[in-house]
Length: 191
Image (cartoon, rainbow, N blue to C red; front, side, top):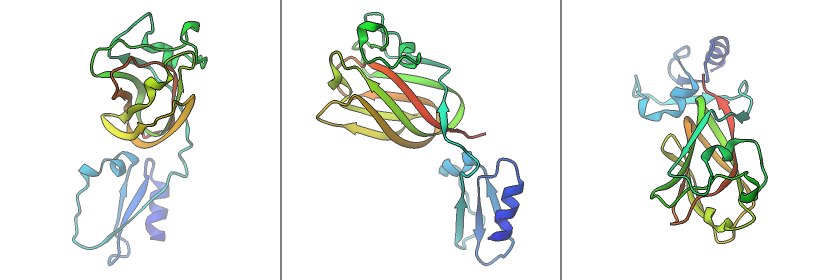
């Protein structure tokens, strides 16, 4: 394992190793994209394979959104208000997005490249209607990474995700307009 770990540390883009116990130097190196895309895993042996992964060289940072879209607009609440850096939680200050009632009701932000999304922070509207974010799913590239279903509305929440992708979506499971005053994604780029 020490030999394989050393080999991984010298290869750009290596995220971890698969080490077959019976072969002292049988190392299979993989990238972060390969690690989190388990559908692409294939085993070249029927023997047990121990997997070791590390994110030591990947500093978690705020991931910039390069664009957005939403299921529909209402009252001037365009999707870009949710990623403009303005964290005021009052819709009438021009700081929150606002969808119409086109079903399904969603907001989606685009990241500049495939990234490991570790967490997402959402700033909820506080001047009215905070309960509209009581029941939703957080998805990255169509995969649910957090399922929110609460009784008491939140002001700001930080949701753990750990999903690989480039699209971050909030899917409202209530029949109510979706208002997001600010949304921030944190993680690291996978390439």
